[in-house]
Image (cartoon, rainbow, N blue to C red; front, side, top):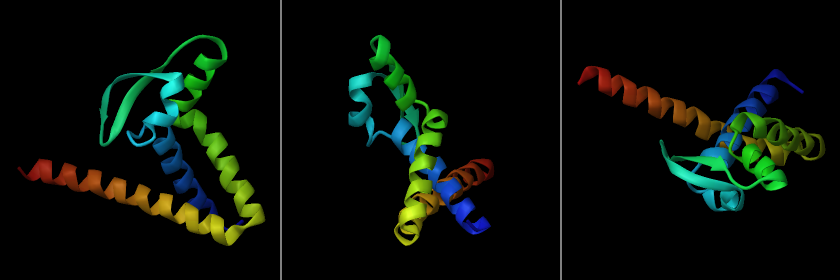
Length: 115
């Protein structure tokens, strides 16, 4: 794997993990295992695991982008091993979105400092 592919998959993993664990759009996927606590800013939500046993364990996993990261990375690596072209395309979508997020936050901060 090249350094470029490693960086691409790393950025994609960060973004995909964040989307799965915190994004408002994926909240219905987490709902059976989590309890809504409130908005988290930038299109994200704050949730906590609900229930006990396996349900709570899954809730803790799906609300933690760091915990999900290893699973998302495994998916990207598996995809890369069997279909690198498709995996690069999918990873590029997440990676570009991640870079755009950082640019948006930087722009907002710069605008805030000038006002």
